[in-house]
Amino acid sequence: MPQATYHFPRGFLWGTATASHQVEGNNTNNQWWMWEQTGHTDGTSGLACDWWGGRWREDFDRAAETGQNAHRFSVEWSRIQPTPDTWDEDALERYRAMLRGLRERGMTPMVTLHHFTDPMWFYEMDGWEHDDAPMLFEKFVRKVVEALKEYCSLWCTVNEPNVYTLSGYVAGLFPTKRHGLNVAKRVLANLLLGHAAAYHAIHEIQKEAQVGYALHYRPMVANNKWSPLDRLMRNIQYNGINMAFPSAISAGVMKSPMGNVRIPEAKGTQDYLGLNYYSVDTIAFDITRPQELFGKRYYPDDSDFSGTKFIANIPDGIFDTIKWATRTYPNLPLYITENGVEDADDKMRPRYIAQHIHQVWRAVNFNFPVKGYFHWSLVDNFEWERGWTQRFGLWGVDVETQKRIKRPSVDLYAEICKENGLSSEMVQKYCPEVFEKLFPV
Image (cartoon, rainbow, N blue to C red):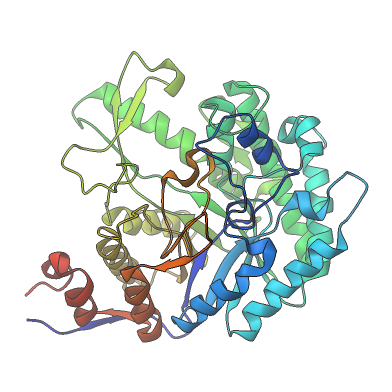
């Protein structure tokens, strides 16, 4: 049996990622809470993981004790700026305490400034559809960065702007007032302007800051490569989902199937790129799906599925994602800002983690500039419209008692973090079913 270890560079960041609304609890002043109370989600967030009540301390302890040296979390706009004309200094102090807590545990923080949630006052004025939205976001960002800069210099402006826009303004799964491709284009353009304004504001306040955003990147393949319709649908879906932000930051022009928009302010506004990768879609032409631009997205029937078939385990896709980013932005630092799988029984997660981290190692071995990996997630949390039906945490959460439940993947990820690498012994111990794939004879 071969014995080897795939080591990562010294200083590589190993962490997990969370988002404020999903873990804090009782975020009653944003549009997602309203959405939950009106029956649009599978259950309600309620107390979530009780981080606002202080349980972040015990969860940070668990992360540090298991070898993690970084954590990505988000701040809640609706707590910090509950009305257009008021700031909650107590909320800012709580986030300062969280950041101090990470630093005291030897962990590097990455702070996300917008992770899907908007204050109700912002939502009621039509949110990111409004021409003033970028300016209002910049004002919020300035307040936050001034307050937190002592403890953080790694900033993520916006999480998954493509998912926020398409899931809300096209699919209707996220809270919005209006739907349609034209309004989606306007929202994406304003998110870009907000990101660009935030980028420049952060650098004005903190010269040493590293500022980027987190892109949900979705590799896609045509169902039949010989079919021109399948290939066309693949290209339309791929560009529509993946390319609006990257095209604007590369060239100052936001490209989308709804038409291009010149946004010169966005060009070059990133010091790193965050990549959220989960799986790969197969695309087929389907005339019955006009709302999806006539493209059916699916996983092949023989896929290695998660419990609810929400995710297929396709580890090669994370290598392809990194390769795309490196070709698009040569020499730009990259972080895997999210990667994980919903798996309440923790039967698939060990091989998912091992196989994906092996692919990240392959990318690093090609000298692709990957600087860190953040697993989604540290603990089970409220998964947006899907509620508590999906369990992404290394640690489980009993929502009724707030008890944390240690899953086997905790120990696997701890060994990876502490070793700064993935060894044959780890794979043999936690997921022997993929040993020959990762350590071939």
